Image (tube, rainbow, N blue to C red):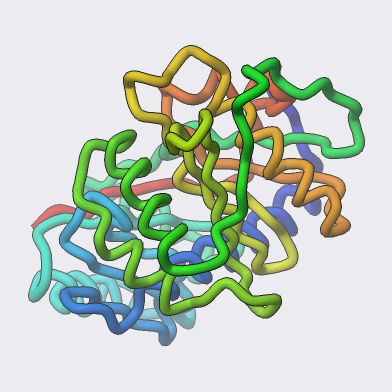
Length: 266
């Protein structure tokens, strides 16, 4: 099923998504090896698969767009050879996507964008009685979250510990983290980000040995309930191909928010 939004609803949601994704990247700003520029454009370079390398906002006055593109690419090339360039419907100039495509950077949806109605009633996924989910509330719990995330994603996520521990766990935190335990063994993890007048899920991961048992679905469902309890009536997620069917079973549907991903290469 594909959801079709009105033009105004799509623009509004795209603005929220943009603000939410920028808030996520800002969590890593200032850490060793991380470069963030937040001006007429917002771009972030980590040199790592996660949190990644991305341009998330472009706001240039109409006119001389080609010079702006050249200048931005030259600055980024000082740090990295390729970057994902997200163009949102409200970014400026309005024809930016066409200009990037003309330069050999064709645009596409950039993955699976899914949306869920949180007012609909859904049953919680079935899991063993010994499974429980806990919110990360201190550095030791954050270290366990990182370990299970590393086992699921298959990479070094030490920078996530640095970013999330620095952000903190108190009532002012907008980045909330959850770990699912089977008995005392952490078996799944995920993050809820409440920013930009929207809340979404990031970094949901289950190590291979524990997949297919409903743990990823259970932690996703639990975080969806937290988002609903925070007063939201809907949520969205940027999904990998592997996880797409998991989210769809929980009520997520495909939607085109109007944003397009282009790739710049040096």
